[in-house]
Amino acid sequence: MNFRFGVFVLLGLAVSISGCGAGAAAGPGNGLVPQAQDDEIPDWVEQLPAGQEPGDNPSIGEAALYLAQAYNAEEDADANRFFSQALEAAEEGLAEDPDNAELLRQAGEALVNLGRLEEGAAMFDRAEEIYPRIIWETMVTREIAWVEELNEGFDRQDAGDIQGSIESFERAHMMYQNRPEAMLNLGSVYSQLERYDDAIEMFGQAIEVIEGPWAERTDEETREGWMEQLDVARTNRAQLLLFQERFDEAAEALEGLVADDPDNLQLMASYGAALVGADRMEDAEALFDDLLNRPGLDASDYYAIAVGLYQAESFEQSAAAFEQAYERVPQHRDVVYNLAQSYYVSDNWEALLPIAEQLVEIDPLNQNAYSFLAQALIRLERDQEGVAVLDEREALEFYMQGLGLQFAGDDLVVAGQLVNNGAPAGSSVTLRVHFYDVEGGSLGSQDATVELGAEGEPVVFQVVAPEDETLFGFRYELM
Image (tube, rainbow, N blue to C red):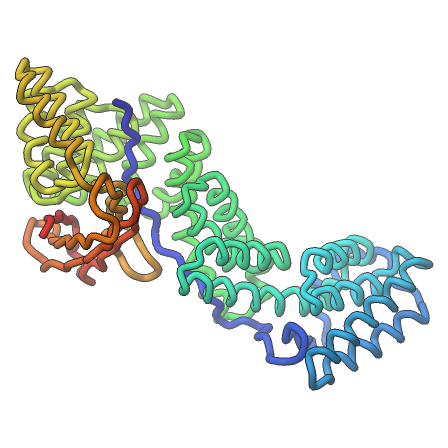
């Protein structure tokens, strides 16, 4: 059997717009009413390369007139007609003067308002390339379109249309790259869909924006909102790099994080795993020795260290650390599962047997739990019992996959998928999820009822965890 160890939990991201300087006003067409810029051009615009300033062209005035009429139109049909005429006028001028940045900007503005965002963005790109200082005008339309697409993405996400939300967030990002919110949301959604390299790229771009000059070009409220998301983006990117086995990049990213937060054992353990993957064994061994010898470690601390050791393929050490977490909170499904997995890859069959038996009790729909138990029995020459366990595994009418704690917006949830394995479609299944704190104390329970899909079809469910800082683990039972 080949198991991939998925233990990292991405920090929650559902980044809305705060302090946005370009709130989209309702109006004709797409509702993109340009916002007046301050008369005073800021220093950063003046410091851009001069480029080729647009010359006079009769089409500029004609296109400007049509644009003004479009914004003043009361009916969408009239507005769209004027935007189309503005586009025609700008294109007529560009036929004679293809490098006129103002005509390119006007064409882009008309295209965006006609819903042709990609073409409009391309026009703006060309205008800014020829005359960089025109960004002070293009960014108005860019940002308003960005706001509309971002909000559309949130609406689609709330309606459960994940693919539609991605398309909206991607259009927002295509339109305007000088704010991080679309990038952060794309990184989060890509991660959920296991598009990890795409998520890494988006988190990286968001970090560049927040740490770059654009943070100083926005208002204080917006800047504060960005800075609150910076550590989340940096942490998620680093963990994804580690998960994708891009060890050198992960080590570099995590080195900066642990320098800022040396008491964060989860980050330290991940850093150790990255060091091992990057072949920096001496540094990794010293780091893990330091972590394991720190006083006052609780179950959560040992669990974080164990995860890092497992990712570093130090399976015996990871098992020892998982054992420490297990002694403190034996009810936590993830601790039991990962301890079983550590014993399995270490060929420690005697130790695996009782843990696998417990795993089947607290994770009764997990096919891997039965496989662990069957393997332990067979390796201990109890073949008949092992075969019986495999028969139980095959007889499951539905099974669980992808179970774990994760963020859903601002909520921490237990989420997973129930897959129909022969039960009547539409059958109801009720699960009771029990929650525990870091000392093993009960934090209550929540029920979830799931309606099974067709055979082989996974159905997603989630249960919101208690809002308690001491929350550590969970288990579930079939009602």
